[in-house]
Image 1 (cartoon, rainbow, N blue to C red):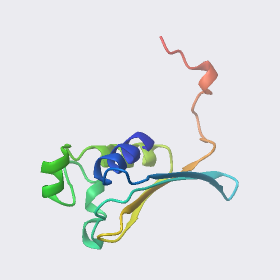
Image 2: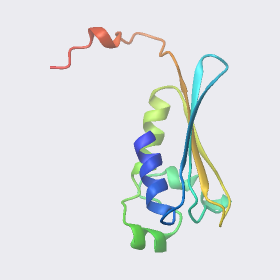
Image 3: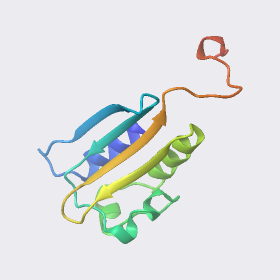
Length: 119
């Protein structure tokens, strides 16, 4: 998720503009990660559809910057699989803040990372 947020922020921010990355613990059991860019922003009516596969807010930006429209859809799926939530806060002309909330602990039948066989 973070890779896709940062990749998009770099891609859509004007040269020389800063990108903000923040992480904070919420309610002592979730972490909120945000990436804020200084790009063109996203109209309210396009904000939900950018998380769908092969969908982008503005095709002119796609032609200029490239991309398939899969990054945010993948980030959404990963976030949901981890029991989190994802979204964007944006206004046209004022950049965008992409965020995800993830649990600090995954409950259930998962094995601890130390016991997972990576070979």
